[in-house]
Image (cartoon, rainbow, N blue to C red):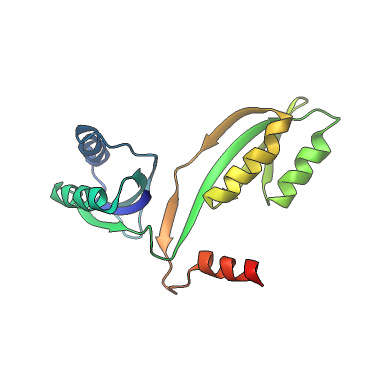
Length: 172
């Protein structure tokens, strides 16, 4: 199972290296990693997606807390949260099929950020499922390049689980 960990750290050089080293020494993979400033100056939030069962994640959490500069570790996998990723995707688009590519972009609320005679580059923001869906829809046109950020996530203070609400809507 994939777990999403939200880690608050002091914003000092070497913190990310120590965290990556911890995972490497134990033979664990980080599938997705995003780092940026948090709500307080001098603090950064690291959001990572890590495969493993609950026991493995519990051990990793304990090990993370042993590192200096780590302030808080939270497994938000089962917690209602807002999750987003950003993807830039460059797709073959000639004058014959450009309208169709742009039409698909509109359906997914993607933005056209660059156009050439042979391609269109789109910016897509959303949950990971949305990014996979648009990628699948654009594959037949020919994908030239993809760049994706790692997942970023914040816990929903409202406690509303939108995935649960979506499942209710689909049953109606």
